[in-house]
Image 1 (cartoon, rainbow, N blue to C red):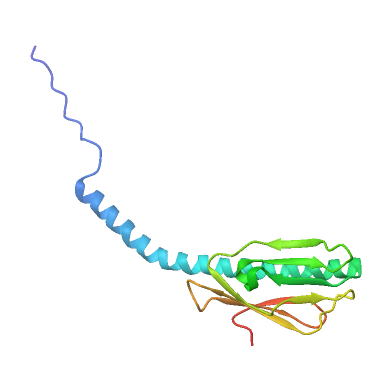
Image 2 (cartoon, one colour; image 1 turned 90 degrees about the horizontal axis):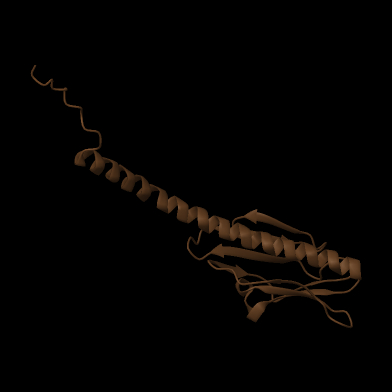
Length: 157
């Protein structure tokens, strides 16, 4: 009896053409996603910096009222983007908060902010946080005379 031949099984896998099509489509999709991701990251950096400013302002106001002393918030090295420090002016000054430098943002603001023991500030202040990567990405942190900060999209007006 002659040996029986089994029918050949089809080989599994991808052809070179199929692989090149998938790589090309992936490259196109990645090229479309990268600019959007850059804008997203710039926006998140600006939001984070503005949020940290508002948080420090609220903490400083709270501590000024609680301790009934003036609390000063000053930029590190004269530049808000380099960070800041909140210190009370009691007989023995206490550092209440410190913030390290932010990458990818510039922050324009007053020379300092001083909360009085009643939680108010002497003059209203505003901070403009701008992305260094996408200059149109901005947030504004305003502090009215009551000392309560508010944030909004866009540059301060």
